[in-house]
Image 1 (cartoon, helix red, strand yellow):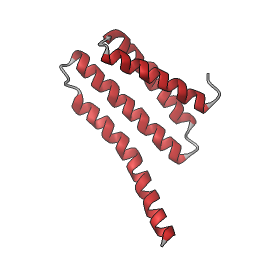
Image 2 (spheres, one colour):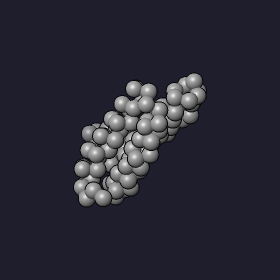
Image 3 (cartoon, rainbow, N blue to C red):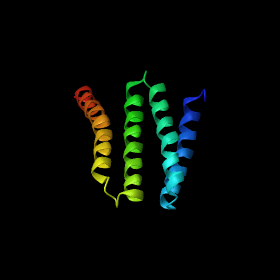
Length: 114
């Protein structure tokens, strides 16, 4: 297991790129396989970031993003692009994870600067 959180994040980028390359090249089996380690690494990174609220929320948003991305890919591969509504739900969950964080930061910044 990777000791450094940064090393985990960098490896995660590699997995994500491989997954998306499989998607764009229409390598269905490999693309499906790559969802698992990519999503698992995102969950692992989020878990490791749990002590820092801001980092954790961003990492959790990435988990939702990859879930959306994988769902969309599956839909394009096997369901005539019919999983977009589910993917939209995951994308929305990612936004709902971090938008309140930024709204609170904006409110706090406005309050402090006044």
